[in-house]
Length: 186
Image (cartoon, rainbow, N blue to C red; front, side, top):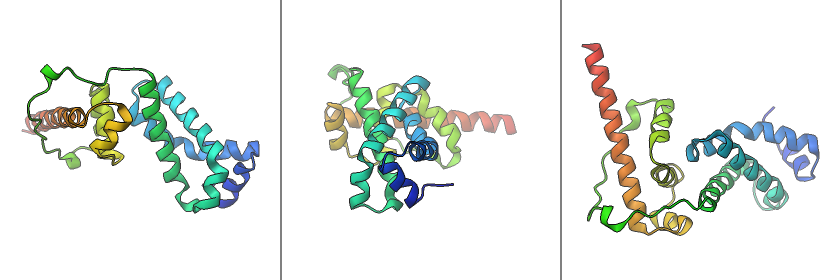
């Protein structure tokens, strides 16, 4: 079916069947955002449902000022922000003790072209939660370190550290996988 203008307009008028159909259409793209932020299925569902609720609440106002062709991007942005808010609410410690932070965080080159998307998602899921969050926000969602700092209540330096640590881990895992593949082929 797809997300059509008429479906959006009907859902904006709070027609239950249209809201349900819109939910079905939005499920996969919004769940893919939640998947990047949470390893736990329950947390993903909470994020998805809260996000969709916000989408429905703001749909009428959105359609008054924006083209329906941009709807899914708007809904994904809401989902991203909802995931960040949920993580913040869980009051996880996002700061690292200053004695653990290196004087200068070196950013490793990450060449993910050799890994397929599914494998990369699995590797991202292996990262510590804060590193995964910062990596998602910066590399995938395009937030700056200043924006990440403001959203998560950490310093910009701390954001850079977590991104660098995540990249180092991913690079090491990808290099190890390449070595294993070489030894298997030879």
